[in-house]
Image 1 (cartoon, rainbow, N blue to C red):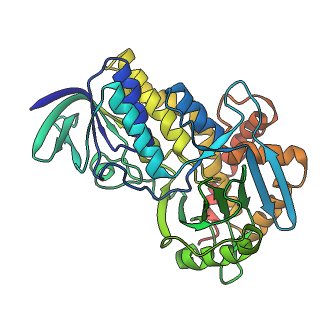
Image 2 (image 1 turned 30 degrees about the horizontal axis):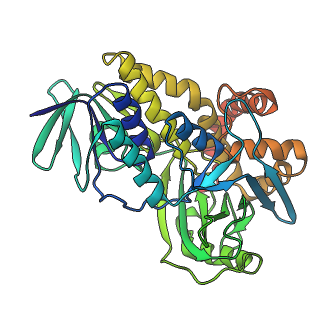
Amino acid sequence: MENCDIAIIGAGPAGAAAAIRAARGGARVVMFEKGAYGRDKVCGDGLTPRAVGAMRELKAELDDAHRIDGLRMIAGRTTRQLAWPSTSRFPDHGAVVPRRRLDAHLADVAQEAGAEILWATTATPSIDDHGRVTGVEAGGRRWSASLVIVATGAPGAVARLLGAERVADEPFGLAIRTYAPSPRHDDRHLEACLTLSDEFGTAVPGYGWMFPAGDGTVNIGVGALSTMKGFSKLNLNTLLDSYTSMVREPWELGEQLERPRAWRLPMSSQRRHGPGWVAIGDAAGLINPMNGEGIDYGLESGILAADTFLDDPATAPEVYDGLVGERFDAFLRTGRRFSFLIGHPFLLRTGLRVAVGTQATADITLAVMGNLIDSDTPGAAGRVLRLADRALAAADPLLRSTRATR
C-alpha cells in the first residue's frame, strides 16, 4: 500500500488543473492516465476567454497558442462578427490549441509543481465496506488517498462504479471533427454556423465550426443535441460533409488531414461527489449545452476541488459540490431545458433569428457561446439568465413531455 493525499484519475485539463493547484499547495498528488504522454483527445481545440483566464490563474498559459479575438456567428443570411468582451473577470481573447499540445503542456506544469503522473495506467477507485472511496488500484498496486478526484471525461467504468453516470432523461451531445489545410489558418475569429440541417432537411440544434489553429490548418467539425427530431438517425459524417461543402470555398479548404473522429458530450451527472471522492469537468457533466464546450469548466472545477481539499480535507467533497452548484448549476440547467425547446425545428429557426437579430441579442448569444455567463454575471446577460431559469423551470414538465425526439 502506497500513500498520497490526492489521487487523480485522468490527466486531461481538469485533472491537470487539480494536480497543479493541489501540488503547489503542498499536497502529495498522484495522477493516473490510461493513455500515453502526448495522447490526443478528440475536441474542437478552442479555448474561450474563460479558459484562458483559468490557465492564467494556474500560471500555465501557452504563450505560443494561436490567439482568438472573437466569434463570427452565421445564421442563414446573417453574419455577425463580434469581439470577446473586455471584463474584469475574463481576458479579452481566447485561443486555439490542439489538445495534444494543451494536455501535454498542462501535464508538464503539474509535474513541475510536484505531482507524480503514471502514464498508460488504468486506475479504479477502492471502496470500503461503508461505501467510502479510500484510494485507487492501478497496475497491480494500491494507493490510499484522502481524496480521489475523478477526471475521466465522458462517463465510463469509473462513473458506473460510483453512480456518477449521465442522467438518462437529460440532453447530451454528439460531435465530430477533423483537420484540413487552409490559407485562413491564422484568422483571429472562431466561426460558428448556427443553421445546419440533416440529410432529410430537419433543422439541427447545434452548429458547425471552423477553428483556425494558426499552424496551417483549421479544426472543422459539427455538433448536435440529442433533443432534435430524428436524432437516433443522425449521420454525423454526412452532416460534416454537408457543412464542409458550405465552407470549402470561402475557407479554401484542402483535403482532410485525418479521418473524422466523433465523441459524446455528457451534460449531466447523477452524482458529482461522495465519501472520499469528487468528479470534475466532463465527468461531472460540466458542459455547456449551447456549445458543447467544457475545457474552461474542467479547469475551474479542478481548481475548486484542490482548493476545498487544501482548506479542509474532511469536508472537501460536500463543500466542492456546493461551490460548483453555486457557480454553474443555474446556467447549465437553463441550457439543458432550452435544448428541449430548440429541438423543435420551428422554435429553433425562430430562436436563431432572435439570437442574431440585433446587436443586443447577439452580444448575449456571444456570452452564451463563450461560456461567459454564470450565477455571478452582471448586466443584461446575467438578468436574461435569471429570468430564463425561472421561466423554463415552470415550463420544464411541458418541455420534457413534448420533446421533439418523441
